[in-house]
Image 1 (tube, helix red, strand yellow):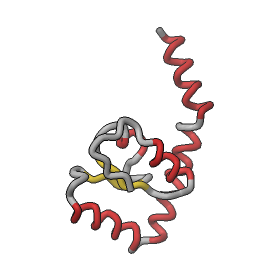
Image 2 (cartoon, one colour):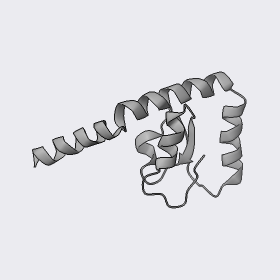
Image 3 (cartoon, helix red, strand yellow):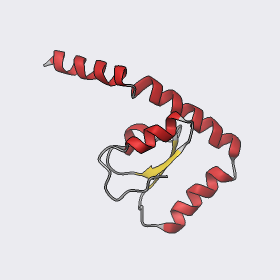
Length: 97
């Protein structure tokens, strides 16, 4: 869980996802790029303790779903966020301009 008020990217989330941990983050910053309904949950207000507790309970009370979202999160990281993948996207972007 990383309910940050300010987090431009969030490497910690990607690291957790690599180990098949579904994430709970905010709707802000870069989180929507890699935390979605397949890989975790997001909260609108990171200061809303009730919403955060509900999201945590959602995963804790559904271990099979938590494991599935964690597996999908790992696949997403390996497909899109390895150094090789990021460098390739950067190369294509630079080449296009």
